[in-house]
Image 1 (cartoon, one colour):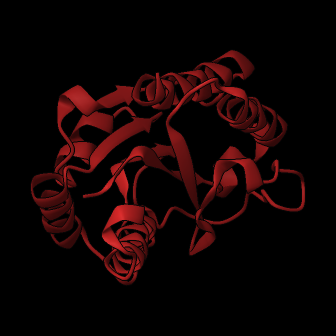
Image 2 (cartoon, helix red, strand yellow):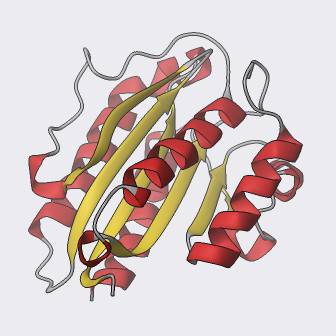
Length: 198
């Protein structure tokens, strides 16, 4: 049996150049979310995975205890480049799936919840495309009950999420061009994770 007292939070976060004007707000809002989760009084523990993406992608944290995750700062969140969204999502799924397949069942999280936060459309992936991502998300949701939540500032957010196989019910348009909008976006993410831990 999987560990019913453990979930895995996966944050796939845009760090493309268009996020640069609100870099400080993004860092501060992420850190607020992170500390809320660290301080949440819950019997459900959390692992944390972070993928940042621009023209490429970085697996920043891979399934580490939430309490061990450091805050972001100017050195660890640099906004430049384009938007390799499919590569980031695909690499996250493959990396987490491989790790969990090599983890003893009673140490696996009972739930994996993936949140994707982006301010724009895919424009630079090299390794994955929408068709492949859609198949991968279908497998993870149907066979392993992962959940995917898509938050996007693009006017085509619902079209973009549908192309990846994420339902409209799990999609939300957000404002990432204001301090309040960025704070609200991370508050939504924090509330989502808290609902699984309360």
